[in-house]
Length: 343
Image 1 (spheres, rainbow, N blue to C red):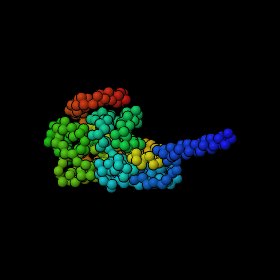
Image 2 (cartoon, rainbow, N blue to C red):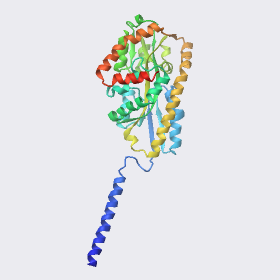
Image 3 (tube, rainbow, N blue to C red):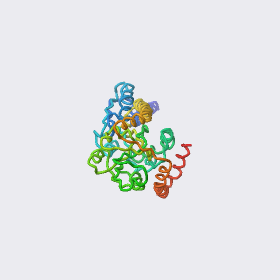
């Protein structure tokens, strides 16, 4: 009898050890590592070195990440398409070959909600844009992007309000007729230019200067910070302060890379991303008058549309909204929510 009890206790002890071993193995498969490893974070974007995006990366994001991570994370910034154009580096972040990037809304063809901030004349000013993108609507967009493309939105940042720079004055709807405009290769911008009466030529930002210089196109649309940082003032003479669309950016990280980080490393990156974004918004908002003065000093003439011209432009693009309302069941409700936040 004693022998039987001894055998039973031995089996029970062995079983307990085995179960403990299995439990330890399960814990070891956690998606958040417990021991910090050292990584280099490549951050890709298409902006010139002195654009507020790269200034904020250099002055806020990079030092904060490197200091707060105790050297386990190093940041390398690849500006001005050094890791390829927007589509190339965005694909790299999705695939995990590039850790982070700052694209525009290039993903909106697959994730339509990401294109909403750029819909014509929707966001009214910086305060309105920031409230929308940093609130529940911005989170909803980011969640859909992560689900669809496997990239996490760390922060919304700002490119600015889009305006037309042209080789000849545009001061009325009539002046759009026959105007050869470069627009980004996204449906909303192509439709916007066409709705205003222009002949639209989609092309990536990296090709715009040469196209303007060689007079392949008569003008382009971008925030004036891009006109300055990309040197378009050398081949353009006029800017229409149309503010016809707002262009945000997103600081994104590859989920494949994100899952390698410890909880502490993730916290460091998230806090640095917020500091970078806050600073970048501040720089962009303050820079408008500085950019305008710089461009004026370079000989560019600014045209401010009167109320009638503004209303004519807004009326011309309304069919775009009707199209989206018919295509996306969520569109009208989202636009109404955004409009309410402007009041």
